[in-house]
Amino acid sequence: MWGIIATWRMSYEGVIKAKALLENGTDAGHGIEVAIKEVENYPDYKSVGYGGLPNENGIVELDAAYMDGDTFAIGAVAGVKNVKNPVSVAKQLSKDIFNIFLVGVGAEQYAQKEGFEKQNMLTSKVKTFYEKRVKEIYEKDLSPYDGHDTVGMVCLDQWGKMVTATSTSGLFMKKTGRIGDSALSGSGFYVDSEVGGATATGLGEDLMKGCISYEIVRLMSEGFHPQIACETAIGRFTEKLEKRTGRVGAFSVVAMDKTGNWGIATNVEFSFVVATQTQEPVIYLAYPEENGTARIEEASPEWLAAFAERIKHVIE
Amino acid sequence: MWGIIATWRMSYEGVIKAKALLENGTDAGHGIEVAIKEVENYPDYKSVGYGGLPNENGIVELDAAYMDGDTFAIGAVAGVKNVKNPVSVAKQLSKDIFNIFLVGVGAEQYAQKEGFEKQNMLTSKVKTFYEKRVKEIYEKDLSPYDGHDTVGMVCLDQWGKMVTATSTSGLFMKKTGRIGDSALSGSGFYVDSEVGGATATGLGEDLMKGCISYEIVRLMSEGFHPQIACETAIGRFTEKLEKRTGRVGAFSVVAMDKTGNWGIATNVEFSFVVATQTQEPVIYLAYPEENGTARIEEASPEWLAAFAERIKHVIE
Image: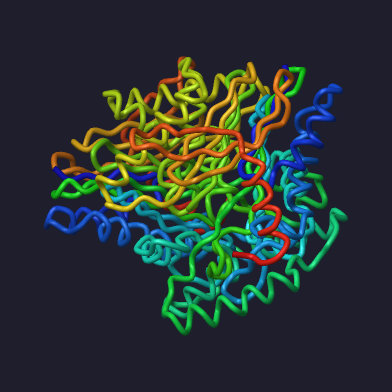
């Protein structure tokens, strides 16, 4: 059995590419890297890689991570500028024993020395959007922070190896150097090939309060189906946060176990993509229900057309 | 009941200061900050704050974090230069909703804007040590990486509030921008005032593979005594790492629950400090046993004298 689950509609084209590799026996690590790079390279996806949203100073700073579920090897970069494919840098770092998580200038120096491609990650479209947003925030006294859609994937290959990876430009208008959960093991991602993997998207500041990806994998290790593991972890964590702080950020999680079963949980409208050996790639929409479950349906042709229209013309 | 547990002998003077505050009803957040700052400010403690060990380029880069167990509020900085008290910056960041984890230049800009004291954290003694070490590594082809003693503390105040905080200069001779587990929630620290808290020291690259602090707190929430929670978490994690990679870095953990009970686990010789309402401040030594437990004894006058001698004269 092979399989891949990924956050947000934007991961669809990458999942299609990964499917072609995985069904031919490619290693999960290569498959997931190809899939995430596809999202990073696509200029109209506004929260990941090239065309990602900038920080408060108009600079695109990126976070990414990679984890191998066979060995628990982790690589991560955060607050990194001018690197075309942060996920590839993270994946290479995971091969080392020391210095596996690099931030800021150090991460950029490493990428440069190792020959990774450089690129100014700000597109003219996003530059215009940023300038408009700065004006709006100033004029209307708005909270600057919205938009934090991380691409996160969990992948199982035919040989039973599982991996997870994430990539994001983080919170729009974030402070210079701000990092979220996407590069943090246990919060943004976690995987164990003998159990399964999970990854999260949403308000990183809240996600790191709960080690949510680790907890989902742990629940799967106790025999929970990925769907129940996601609902249980998110349910317990949401209840705790509400009780202690009265405030819960937006978050969504996806998980897959070692047999290719999958699940999700979310407290906002959320799209995601799944492909497995027994299931053609599908874009799903999830709508949170009162009881902590989510109503899941295939994205309609109308929804998909509206999405395509939206990303081509303006950033909202 | 109040109490505080802290990693390594170097935390003793800070614990004494915290004790004086906690027994007079001071908030745990203030108590722990005072204690950690004491370690940061002491020039002869070579792995934390002023006098900390530099990276491969001779620059001291620091990581620190703070977490409030009432609200799960977290603040963290990593890869930060020229900041006298990183723990205070982390504590202040924990009051925000967004941008709570800042790295590199962004963290330095924040500290500057907020009026935190600047300082070149490299002492002349450490500079000499660094230069000697660079020569040795070159001549003898040694692995540069050793020395990663994080100060981590868990603190309970008379009002039932629990907090945890960490501070470290990280791996000696690390690459620029390398961060370890100390600033990562769930790996380097975790606390829930309704349960207890835990913090870790050791090879961050391995510690972040297991979300070890989160796991210890979770085991305490299931009713485990802190000592059993520490041994169980470390035991299971060590077994997994050995099986999957055949290699386990040095690590040690300390934990305290909401009633002031405490525990530790370690796979190396490890010193730590405890003070509670019912126990005068004590410096303990822990020696790992074959079965995953540790033999714990009070540090002897001879050991303490040797320690004092060692840090005054040379850095080993």
